[in-house]
Amino acid sequence: MSASREHFSSRIGFILAAAGSAVGIGNLVGFPVNAAKNGGGAFLLMYALFVFLICLPVMIAEMAVGRNTAKEPVGAFKTLSKGSKLWGAAGFLGVLTPFMIAVFYMVITVWIFGYIALTVTGHLDYLASDVGFGEFINSPYLYIALIAVAGIVSFILAAGVKDGIEKAAKILMPALLTMLILMVVFVLSLDNAMAGVTFFLVPDINKITPSVVNGALSQAFFSLSLGMGILLTYGSYINKQTNIPNSAKLVAITDTSVAFIAGLMILPAVFSFNPEVNPSELSDSSVSLIFTFLPKIFLALQTSLGYVGASAVAAFFFLLVFFAAITSLVSIIEVPVSYLVTEKKHSRKKALGYLTLTAGVLTLFATASFGMVPFFTEFTSYAGGTKSLFDVIYDVFYDTILPLNGFLLCIFVSYRWKKKQLSEELSIGNENYKGSWVEKYINFSLGTFIPVIVLLIFINTVATKFFAANLFGF
Ligand code: PFF
Image (tube, rainbow, N blue to C red; front, top):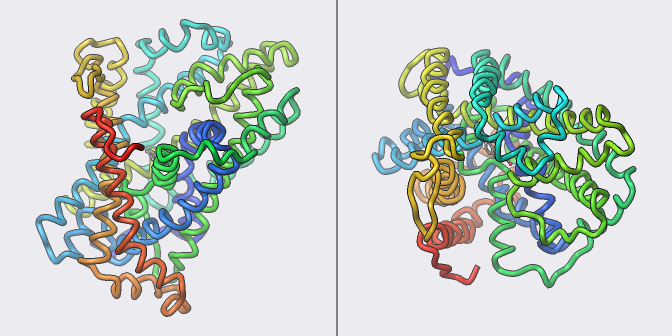
């Protein structure tokens, strides 16, 4: 099977695809608000340190495991542990997690698609109204949007690694970067924009509390698409000439740069809309920011651009977010696709068919969990609150299992596969790797403080999310 495994056609194709996975809604909206609220420049510096000192070694390890085994998480863990059932189960978690995250990410991507459709058809004022979002998420038209989004993602994935994933990334990523820069230039030309830039960048060390540190690290971890089996699977499609540490570094730099540049778009826009705004009052959730606050900002542009102009800017922004979401969705669904193809020996088309159906039905349920269907809306309750199906998927897989997967990967690579094998793999395509300080740092950190830190995050998240108990004061 591995002999016939498809490969990315070039190193740049691989880097764009991996960056396409990493650059997502979190970068464009979540990061800027988080940074502005939590210490500005001080947060940025801390975030960058986390990306390079903690997340990058994990990313490199994921890619190395993938390339070495030419398999997805289940096959890779099984192969390198010589068939251990326990590690096979850890690998399975690495396939189940992306499947479930894909469901919740799909719901949001469907909304974005709906927002594009509504803005281009002249309904920006409705989306900006107080009832807009609440009614929108319960609209039966969302099911048409779901079919459209599932169709686009399946279309890309059906064409395979080179002609699907890589080609889409080669088109969408440059488009996304160009659109982002254009948006930044436009937003910076608005009145009061500089107040937003100041808020984004001026360091305020007093805001750096333990919970902010925890939040920054989690954000960095998610933003680089770690713990989702994605980079492991993409790593299985790269050739032996590729220099993994260098490629991973470029992915991390791209992802962090996009997050940073997005800050120069979102915050100046917020300030030009309302110069009196206090960013600490902005909602923590990217979702409410994108879907309820930003439409109001876009609508306010009508005084200078007219309604059509304001709608065009809004549509342009939502398209930008949509591109980012599609490349991330493609990457995450590729993990279970690859599992069904490699381990279960299904054809790619059949695997995609199964996944579109199962993930599609779950997405349908999750979409209906905002009021449409009471069973899914009041699905369960924990930590003193009623939770919808969407909340449960988000809390369990996105918030909780990701750090656990990261922990398991570090332990697996360091103590089961062993650092020596990791070094061997990473020196392929990188002659200077062995003996370098990068090698020493990676081997040391992956076996010591990185797993400890992600384990602490996991334990703390379980305690706070499910038992409303804050163990470590963060
Ligand atoms: N790095 C992505 C983001 O910041 O949005 C994380 C991600 C989430 C990737 C969901 C893929 C995905 F389906």
